[in-house]
Length: 389
Image (cartoon, rainbow, N blue to C red; front, side, top):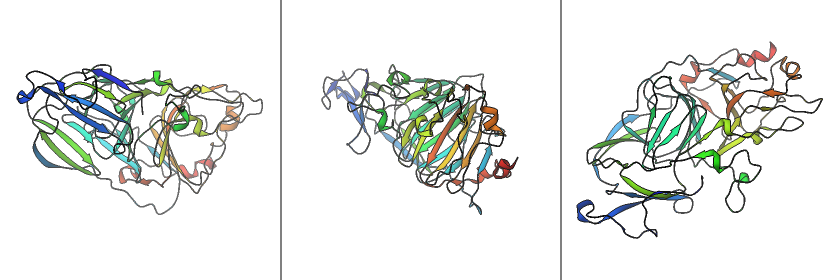
């Protein structure tokens, strides 16, 4: 979790009256909402509303965000060419799921229209990687600006709206986690602070810096996702009626260009690129970095048989030294059971290089990933044979 943060007006102790006069219906108080992770056993935030956050006028079905997977007749590598994907929908309903298992779903999104209704994911943390575009994430915790190459980390049950600045077509890679997205424990010292020598520090995480009170007594709809089901709640007032909060559960951004790569005299394994983790998968950032300095170093990754994980790479920017044929916005899936590695000629080509400018996001999963029908429509069927070229 990110560091403890306090914004706005809060009482001096938890669970005591936070007075306002006259207050809603003359009750003379702000209304406390406790947002907890892991029951009451892990991180939490306490939020203070102008009105009770439980005032619901209407509940109705709002459709589904279905995952339509396609059974694969053979185990093989996949190269999904997502760059030609057209813009469609909004930042929520425009998401195109590509890979999924019980722990994580990976999607692409190029929204063609603004988000009209507030959204709340009740069954998953979200990590929205911003490939292109910039704007603001609006939540009850306060606005969070984002820019290209930001990971926007949104804890489950955060009601939000993604607003993009005009001028650039937004382009997103969306990671939806069934469990809590967290900082790898090995990056933390026993006091909970990010260790010296970790590839980032608390200064690189950017959460809300102010509360923006929306005191609006009018019907406000929120679309809630739990699993594939969508439900529309009509609230009696806007839910961002917050005067203050404190805690460790809130949305934040981390920019991939702030990742500090760890390098060596010879090739270092992918865990040194780890950025976040959740039950069943990790997220890694392959950031621009100096290459191995040993005079006989092989500067591209060795052939690898990952016998207990599926490996997904989303290619963001730069020249990818170990691959031919991939492009910006390509996604490769290298499943367990079969080796993958550098394409022919890339080892020799890398020998004079001292630095790589590549930027890519990797997701390694414990459970096998299933491909959706949308993914198969983007698949390069010749990719498994590309090591013969």
